[in-house]
Length: 564
Image 1 (cartoon, rainbow, N blue to C red):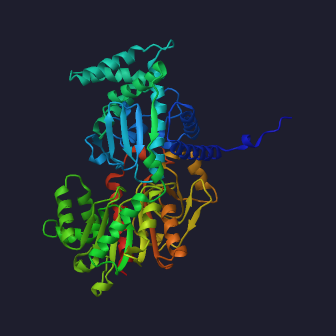
Image 2 (cartoon, rainbow, N blue to C red):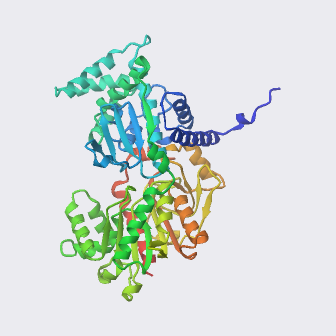
Image 3 (cartoon, rainbow, N blue to C red):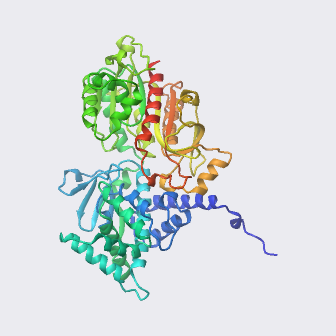
């Protein structure tokens, strides 16, 4: 009788969780080492872990022939334009390249400054903490896996370039020289090289073509395949390196401290520092629109309700209306802090003493007190993963003036975010009662001042319970997510910042005593995707106008609490 080893009893969820751990440990090791070759020993270990994990957002990553097209579009919207052409990628800190004349690119879906140094090299600024680095390394690992498939599909059994590749090469050269090309013939070349049907290639081509800041699909496939062939046929290795300044700054709150002090200085200079302060982590439009849209637009748009105004302001063609609200807000109590000190987190400060309570939306009963008692609201744009701890930890510290320390009077901390939902649909609302940090024993139960009762008549699905703070949204698969949903955790969703915010808040209130232990916490998320639903991942596209209703419902409930 053959005895089974413990490893043979492992579920796919356990295998996947182990793969995430291996990726996390490998990435931290490589950062400290200073660099690696994606197809070297270290890179291969990351590739093996990714293939074992099979993240849901990367779809067909484990298929040996088919290229994952939606996943590629997803990452190219978050990587700088032309990165597929570069053999050398260097991740850097903020090191003065903003004063250089290098060609600068900012990806449309992930704001980070990137510099094209020459034809073969990109420098990419990493100022948003460890999660930002893990995110980009995950994307790049996926990119190299797909590039290897393209190479294999473009070479024959003897290692010679096949006709589809040679024709694609000619087509791309013709494009570069401004010559007319036959796009449909190009689709047939990609049909072979990508291992996908003609219809799938055509659909993908159109999606790439419509995406801002993303290269043409023909050029992307050719560039990925060319670099892979250069490495396979000519030993011209691709490399990823990390600058010494980046390695030294990681984990030391270099950018978060400057960012937080800048906010406190604005409060101090405008005599707002001694007032009750409510911090809101959210987008930079919903609070401003909720407080000022009715006042700013009352002469040009008949007011029916907040949702009508919100949908109007969310439509792309109404930039003039958004500008009107923004200008009115700046003239009536809103301070905008656009210098993000490298964090890429914009900030708005609202002096509610300057609000007109008669023109607030229905349900926002703001009773003006004396000026010194009117709350001040700080709205910070979304942090990214571990960056949430860095920024919130620094923001909750006292402000130092000379040799004196002045604590802020924090009345509440409010977190509104987008998250993946495990039950329910896009646009539904999640109310966390605890955050569990994936891959660790860290868990953060807390008393949430919001509950499902606040949204009982919203017409949306509302779920209350534990949420998982994940290492990266692109590192999840159905096995892990099903485990969190069906096990005793009974998780309702996943996001990237909640545990990090809670770590900072509990440290400030219970250990450092820099804020009150009775600080009010309000957390609510709306579902940007359902990763357990086929076609429901982030790679399937944004919420669009479906996200307007939950965004403004949550915003209004948070503001109600701030105005009490």
